Length: 181
Image 1: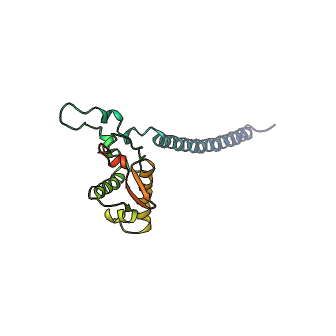
Image 2 (image 1 turned 90 degrees about the horizontal axis):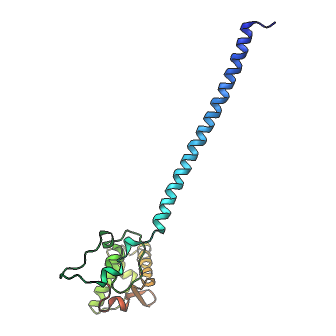
Image 3 (image 1 turned 90 degrees about the vertical axis):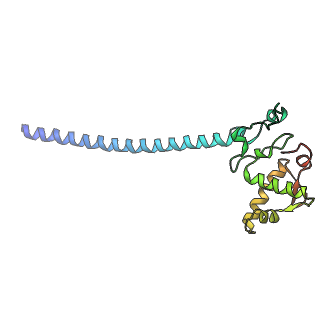
């Protein structure tokens, strides 16, 4: 017959093995839980970024109501702060009558303003290299291509015209009376 001490040692060894196995399983589950929480947080961040990109660009455009009704007093209409300068890398709104230049981000406003000044002085279209030098940018290909990309985007949205390849001017509707303010 086995001794009582031997039986106790055997049960203690069995219990220790079970505790070690449960600790290993708990550690594995804890590591899996941490990985799952990290993945979940990444999905939450991704969803919020996609929502920002796909949300309507209300902050980037001035609604037609803002331009249609002039105020009774001789003051310009008060625009919401978000429409006064769009965020960098924002969507360029399609040009329409009454849409203010302030609906564009500052880089786009600079391009439109340079071409408006040029038109006011009776000068012709500008190339992207000329625009880059007007803005004080180094005449390196990366800077010129950045200006070209913005000018092409403004052209596609109706703000600018490209009468000759690589030469940009204000679109007639934008430059005409009542065009972008």
